[in-house]
Image (cartoon, rainbow, N blue to C red; front, side, top):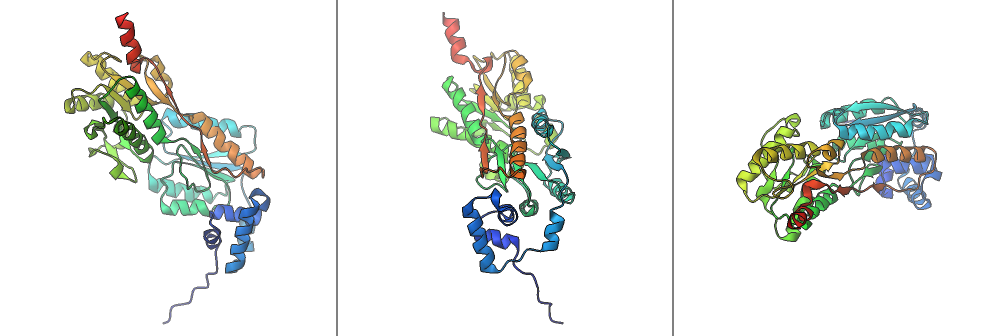
Length: 367
């Protein structure tokens, strides 16, 4: 029996491909043209005419029915990092009619895909998702969603719709440059487990050391790799469960391992503050003076690092501000005030404290 000929006509995705934009932007150009630039309207109109695209009016009517809900997907509800982001989201939505529909992906790509499908079925007014490592099927669903989609906590030149975050590469680079400027030369990296975000920090660490001519690939301690680019990780990881790889105990273990590989190790940049505290605990146990004998930098600048002794230098990330800005972008789009900015870099800052003030400490001892 002959195969039935497909009656599939041109789709919105075809229009977007020809117009050189995302399906979300193409949908806005057709449905709410005042929200996009004249140039995009013209490109989309030309693409529509070229391929004879005709929107499904019944589907459009159904799609226009939206709830006052913003779907929010984060990879963890136990980490202080994402509770800060959520606080910004809730504070931003508080004066509006919009409410949060929250999902936890547990750093599981399959779970993220399932939740995205489930959330979109509830007709939200917008979606906020963490990171840029979505599966192709997940990305496709979000690209075909005709409402705002905000990716957070990272940066890319090709967001699904728009993205609010910071450069993890720049964070790792700045932290390592700070250690180099303080006179440290054998600088290790401790990374629990590595996804694309922490891989960016590691690449920044590596770049700074290579520029200074002091990069040593043996000075990276990694438990497990979940990066989409494992070739960017300069060491072979051991096989560990994700939940075991970001503890203070692991920080202690990483310092032991790196000192065994390179006894001249004199500084560590850690993938998060918990690991940095573990490194500090092990240094105390070994009688290693901080910062004179070992410099330590954490990541995220959580409250505990300023209360340790000595206080820990850490990279401050704008977690609350990211959540708040994501909501502000959603509201702008829904109210027709979209300025067209797709990539929003909120930056990072190295918060210098006692754990890396080597030059100042040595100068004080000489007086």
